Image (cartoon, rainbow, N blue to C red; front, side):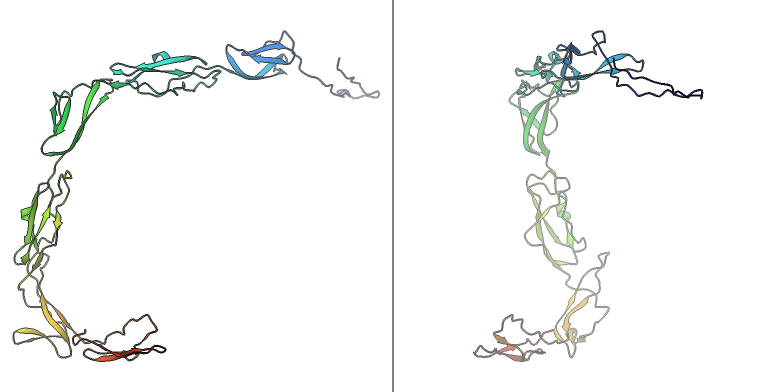
Length: 369
């Protein structure tokens, strides 16, 4: 028996003096009368195993003393076996009534739920499963459950025309696409036929233009695969142009697209320029470039924001300016003579050493501005 001796000092005169002692080495002691924890089987000595019918794992057991100073076995490693749970699946398509509470190592059969048809498959729960959230293993292919035949729609929606005695469909004349039908079930598992693929044809809007310059009144709601002409709006004159709506257009916001060149419209006359810029003079009832200016004067006519003709704007006359040197990115040519060459003048372009050859004249046009 493991014990030590406690002594009272020989000359002790103080009441309450503690004994002098050393702590003995004490260990918890469990025996055959100590209750075995649930899920564990004691085979004697230090040999344990899990209860085969209810638990699985690697047992680890030790003897401890509880708060009441009573010995007891403390076990870990043996987890209770757990049934597998159902997977998330289409409840209208698959019948999984055989797969509720499938025990570890067991199997169940998944079939099609009426009105679906298409065979069956097997699902299983893994041997020794201890995970209460484990989904049954549905690794073989799922049964090919299909609605055959799909019921005819009670009402054929707009845009579709039934044919082949109601078992086929096509798009109406003012719709585009390829009619398709497929089966689906509603929240009550009632099968219905859904039609798709046909879109209603839509006319195009007129293109965005300057409403003071162009007239799009011929192009309101242009039908798909049709065209119309956008013309010049008075007082502008010129050549109009066509726009077209794409074939099969189903976009209600689609604008008609230009075909070829845009319209070319000008205003033949407009109020005299309110401001005469520098470089222009009125001579013999026509505009000319003032002395010291070059070019061909012209009056550009346009309109105000409210579409009234605006005062003309003079363009085309400018002061003469020198021309820039030729940009020759090479060491072959000498253009040093061509600095500040004014309209009508010329300069000599020669060969730069070590090149040789005949020089040429570089000339500036009379009206360079």
